Length: 167
Image (cartoon, rainbow, N blue to C red):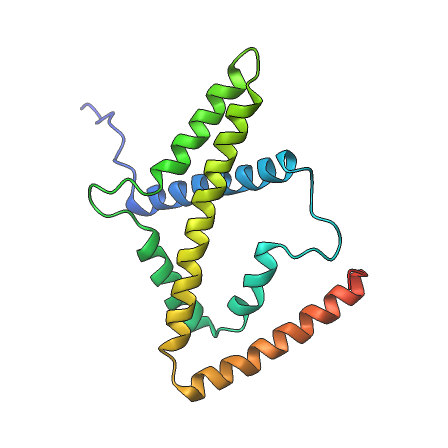
């Protein structure tokens, strides 16, 4: 008897996990590159983009966060024939080309990073719009409960910042 030497095809979940892992790695690389090429981290007390979103997302219930994540994924997922998302990957490939060139073309590299920032800002704007629509769809009671949880998050954030000596 001969055994079938072919491996079974990769499962759908494994492919999804690998894709998400790749996407997160690209985000981390982009964040690090942005910090490095923009002169380091912001000075103490300066507002950072992720600080503004964190209390809003933490104030949602788990079910609300799940629903909002689902809406965000739908808005970010490319439709058939749409090349959204490809722009970021292509810009990273362009950055690789620039990095491998001799001599190094700083202006071209700055252009690539600026293009990545513009793509990220567009995505951030989409997320902000979805957040506002999500809040708009809530009943007044749901919004009031959300505001109470948000107030708790802001108080906790303030306490943490004071503890860290950043306020």
